[in-house]
Image 1: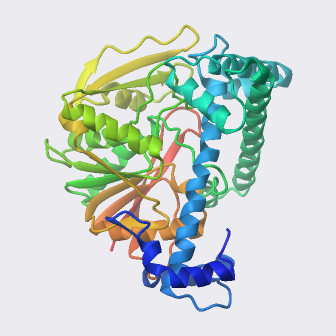
Image 2: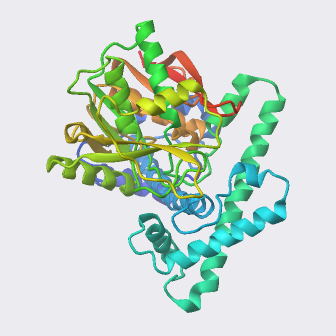
Image 3: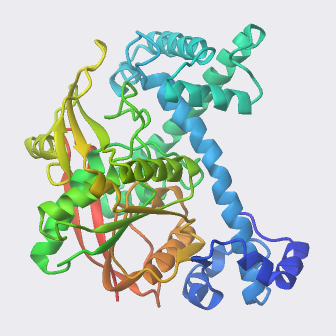
Length: 457
């Protein structure tokens, strides 16, 4: 983790009011006095520039401001990971089969390499004339940002080389992650494995890709919390980093428009479980990606004009789903909209489809805010519930602890955070784990989630 130079510390101390003005009017950086328990707990892992120095409110704020910029810069690397997913799993630009885990682990490395190369070439060709294909247009823009223009025939080979280099980079990283998980598994300790998984992507780009899976686990956790008396009524909730369904390798495709699922899934589950009124709850979306925030804002604006929000929910035909997962998929959206005719998958896609037309009144329950949860919070919030799945895994334990402190400040007393990460327990932190829910999605032993219930004390 990068720290502050002496010059930056001095400038930070002299520019406190200016730095504070960088946050939106209703957001604030984590104050030093509230960060103290985290800093004390991670005394041996503090950012460079802090060792041997007495921290002041302004020098701490200067570091937060710089670190906020560093975190936001990781979005670009996350975009590159989304391009990788599109190249290997997209179906809108190629007739080649998807490069599934079965293909990659099938033992025929040469065949897999040829398939990847063929798909990369098809994406490169499509990027030269993307038309109305939103995802391919995104790939074309990404290529231009990286110095090649797919519309220029002279750049054709460079476009293919850049896409292939990106695919190979992500594959190398995935092998490293798999090795780390394998080492943790060999220890035979489920708790240790969960901890390893919980910050596995701390150095990875912030990817926006998502799927419907965690939403089923959230509904199960909500039901168990209601039964235990931990959660009774949710009037205000937040989803941290909901993501966009771009081209997920496990259950997302690209033959339907880009969509977000988790905010609507949360409202649907809360109403189904009678944990929210029929007219609520209000759901705030906290994200630092303008792609996510802009998508939600446009949906809300269209809803004000009476336009519903359509979601397409695929169920991969090659996954051995458990019956309860299929039941959740089949009933998705019943409380928030009307079932609609789904799009037909391409011939190369083996999937069942479920579509829901979400009512405009439901879409208008969404709000959104540009927020880096590691360094910032909204004040005041008084949330009953916050959800953060597949997002805190992108941060180190030190950053996770800062985020947990910020989330605590946005929750009302006894409010709940649901996360599928094992977050550090820091002395003096007003958040404690009070239960957990473990959910399997399919017959694959690695296809599941464990959600921890963290409660504001």
